[in-house]
Length: 81
Image (cartoon, rainbow, N blue to C red; front, side, top):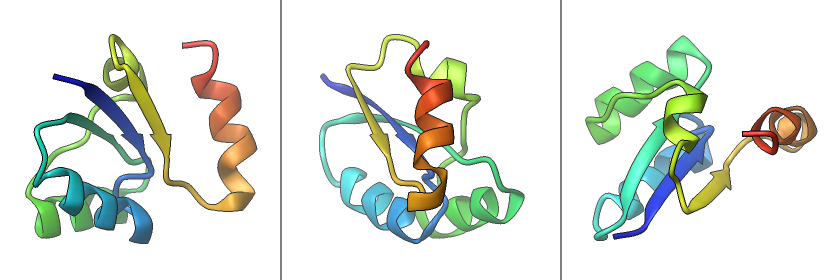
C-alpha cells in the first residue's frame, strides 16, 4: 500500500483531497498547522493530524495542499526530511 503525507490537510483543498483519498486504498497521514484546520479535518473527515516528521517518515508520496504563498516555506521544511 502506498503511504501519502498530505500537508495542508485541513484547508479547503486539503479537506477535499482527504475526503477523496479516504475512498481509496492509500494510507494517508494528515498534517495541518492551524487549530481551525485540524478541527475542520476532524469534523468533516474524522481524522487526526500528525507532526510533519511523523507523517513524512516512510511516506512514498508527499502532497503539498498549501496556499501558493506558503509553498516555498513548506517545501523548504519538507525537502530535508
